[in-house]
Image (cartoon, rainbow, N blue to C red):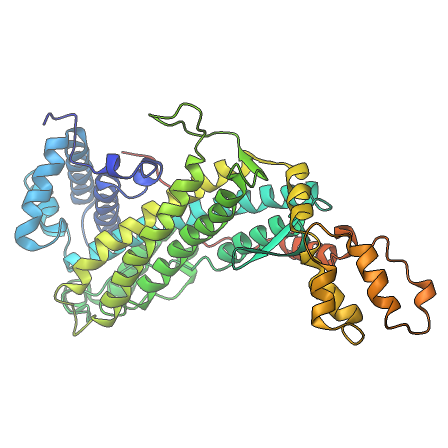
Length: 467
């Protein structure tokens, strides 16, 4: 182990590196520093500490943050020191105080508890991740709408329970994907994450030292973390054991992963050589079989979809286990699960965008697969159109493989003549283009909905640059 290499597990999960920056140890330490600095600045704004104490404390926080981020060994030492108190806030504060004089040291973290800082820091990271996912989902939906428009009339095979069902269009399929993506984007939660409750959620110590300036202090802390608009909102109440909001964050992150996995599953089926309907611009090779072009991005998206439920289940449990004024383990169990979902959501959407933008469609293969599944895929149409005249056996005979369905249908109808048969044109009865129902109307409705009024972007902080 050298100072340039930290303990990571990125090689166990290729693709995770894409989301690592959003929620790695560096991001967390930076966020802890941001929260503590915001509290110092809020105290100064409320007239509770001097300008000199503010400047010294903020400089100490920034210097400690830089020091911790400069060497992997420093982060590892912080992790080791976090074990005794159960969270990284305590050793972080110890490192900062070692650089401060008495007044600045007293102002640091004054009236707060570790949960205030840890919750606010994780919420800060979640807000930045949510802004990323919101923007990325918009780009992906736009790409899928373009794909849908380009293949509005491309006939392909609809499959249900893995089996050929009916003719449809790839344009409708891509529109359905776009609808899923837009739905996830529309459900992006409002990340109201500022936590200020003090030791037991009553703000007793804060009221004790801030007195009549308590409201000004709390409001400015909110502004420091959320931006100027926060001055117009109510001061958030403590939510030490109200973990439903964390569960809501996790739900959005899981949806980001799930929508990528679902689309990837369809793409994986389409890229099978025996299906041949889709191909990816960027594919991975095989170490043993040079002829293979593996659809790696889709494979990794599918993998992420199988990883997310475990983390989501953990956060469901921690929300249920949130007891008293601070949970004994449930709070601590949130951090790795939530960080896992943040990383998965970011990496999944990056890979999903890459996959969608590199997706190629083979209309000839799609039509060939429709023809191969014919005339069986017209059984429904036969039953609807002629079920009152033809028996199930007769319909089965008409759609027999390698037969002539038009001739068989004509012969069967001749056995059960009715007025108007002479006007029937059966030549195109088994043409897929003539049994698409409302596919195009549905597609256009989906696209119009997606292209409707712009969704309101959540009021979230932009992703901050590294310190």
